[in-house]
Every structure is written in structure tokens, then in C-alpha cells.
Amino acid sequence: MHGFRIYLLQRISAMIMAPLVLLHLGVMIVVIQGGLDSAEILSRTRGSLFWGGTYGLFVLVVSVHAAIGIRVVMFEWMSFKGFKLNLVSWLVFAVLLMMGARAVYAVVA
Amino acid sequence: MQEPTDILQVDVWRGDTSGGRLVIYQVPQQLSQTILDVVTWIQREQDPQLAYRFSCRVGMCGSCAMMVNGIPRWTCRTHVQKVVQNNRLTIEPLRNLPVIKDLVCDMSEFFAKWKVAGGQFMPRKTRQDPVEPLLPDSPKRAAANAAVECINCAICYAACDVVTWNPGYLGPAALNRAWSLLNDERDSGQQARLRAIASDAGCHNCHSHANCTTYCPNELNPSASIAGLKRLAARAVFTGNL
Image 1 (cartoon, helix red, strand yellow):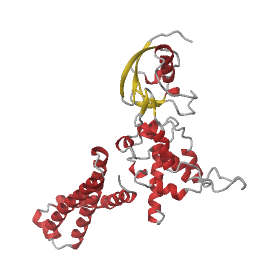
Image 2 (spheres, chains in turn green, brown; image 1 turned 90 degrees about the vertical axis):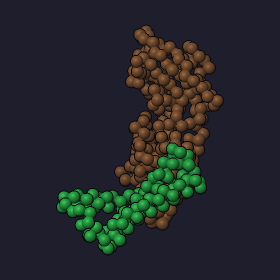
Image 3 (cartoon, one colour; image 1 turned 180 degrees about the vertical axis):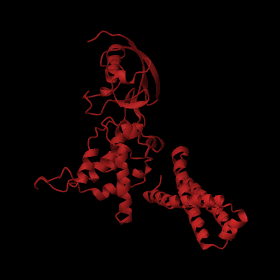
Image 4 (cartoon, helix red, strand yellow; image 1 turned 90 degrees about the horizontal axis):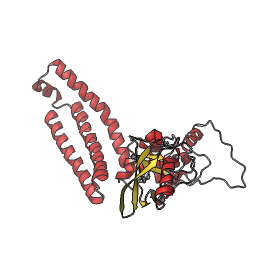
């Protein structure tokens, strides 16, 4: 189905994702409590290397993690194999990465 | 022998490789009756063509496992009183293994996976060498001992959903055996075994549902063994040994 390295990649992506999720939730709570509107949020994120890098990394690891997870589900429950399995896995990765990158661009560019 | 006090309604799967169905039998209930007693009674008293497998009758040989009310169990050590529901029992062949006839499964694939996972002991020394001292309290020996009492009954294999979804997966019994040997300091086949348990059919397919641990009649913990294998294989990847 998939090699041990793909399994490791999913575990490592989860380890990177976990603190980023906590950071994101923390930021959301602080922003809402602070009463910032979207214009004020964007004024802080636009041109910021930190927020661009943070959310860029988040989008990348989510795309890797979710694509591998969905790959396993497709193999085990839908009997996808070989080329078809690889193709759909890469497609899920590409779509998630594209959508996420678009969102990050909209916030920091 | 106590007189029968009640009649059990027992649904037994009858069939072969081409398919089958549940057949109802009426079995007199006895004191301290096991599921194996029920199956034996049916074969002796009602249907001599019923095929099933058993040997030791005392929970050592691992040959009498069947699905009882949908749960894999060693039938020689399972008392009817413990599992009967409304005086009814359903007895079927083990899940995840091809049926030969009635309650008898083909175990070839199960044992072949033991070999693939490196389940054979590969001694480092010969019989001419002095006996190697083993420290029973060392962490590795403790880990090997904790996993070593498997009786190959295939209950964990029948309980494993990952085996159902992915028939190529080595399964909990073979991986538990590999874990035991990977912790055995007398063994010389560790590198090949490590490659086997990290192959596409290997330990990382496990989703840690722990059905194997829940139903293991010997109260082993194959789920923990597989978690140990995952750690070992991950370490081997990062240290360039895999």
C-alpha cells in the first residue's frame, strides 16, 4: 500500500502541524478578544514574513498529511491501487496545496 | 454429568469454499459446558459430517478458535455461560481466513506471514558454543518475554480490521512474533527481520485499533508490540539502517 517512509512522513507532518494548530487557535482567540476587524488583521499580516512562513508551512504539512491519510482510506476502503492510487494521492495533495497557498497569498500579499 | 436443564439454540455455519449458511441445532445445556463441547456434541449426536478443528482442549495448542456470536474466541476455554445470549449461540469459522469446510479455516496464509515477518529464530551460536547467559530483568528480555507466549490461534488475526481491508498486511500475530525476536539478543537475523516488518505489508499499516489486544486469549498485547516495531523501524530509518 505505502512504504514505511510515507508513514513516517505522515507522522512527522502531524508533529509539525500540532503546534501550528495551537498557534492558529491562540491567534484566533487573541484577535477576537482584542476586537480586531479584518482590515486591522490584514494590516498586520500583509508583507509579514513570519505569518507568511507560518501559514505557508501549515498549508504544506496539512496537504502532505491529509493526502497520505486519504490515500490509506482509498486503498483500504475503495481498493484503489498502483497508478490510480498514486494519481489520486498527488491530486489531493496538489488541490489542498493550491487552495491553501491561495489563502496564504490573500492574507500576506 | 448433570442432567440437561435447558436447550441451546445453536446456529453453526455449514459450507465450504463455494459458500454456506447457518444451520440451527438444538443442544442440551450442561454444567461447565464449553463452546468446544457444544460443537463436539453436535458432531457426535446430530451431524457427524460437521468439520471443526481442535487438539489439546486446554488452551495450549491454539487450534480450536472460532467466531462465537461474532467475536473470535478459543472455544475450548470459553464457557457457554459466559457468552450465551437468550439461550442462543452463533458459531462461525474465523474471520479473515479462507474456509475449507464448516468451521475449519485454511491457516496457510497465516503461518506464511509468520515466515515473511522473520518469525524463525536464527541463532548466533552453534550447539558447540557455551550456553549464552540471559538476564531475565534486562529491558530487551522483558519485552521479548511479554510477547513470547503466543499459541498461534489466529484470534488476533481474525479480530483485525486492517487484515480485512488489506489482506496483504502481515497481521498482529506475525508482527508480535517479530517483536519478540527483535528483542532476543541470541538472534542473528535482525536486519532482515527489520526490513520485513517495515515492508509495504509491515507494522505501519496498523491503525492501533487494538482489537488484537482486546481478544487475545493469552492476554498478550500485540498492539504494543507493533507500536514497538514502529519505533524501532523509525529509529532505523533515521540512523541509516533501513
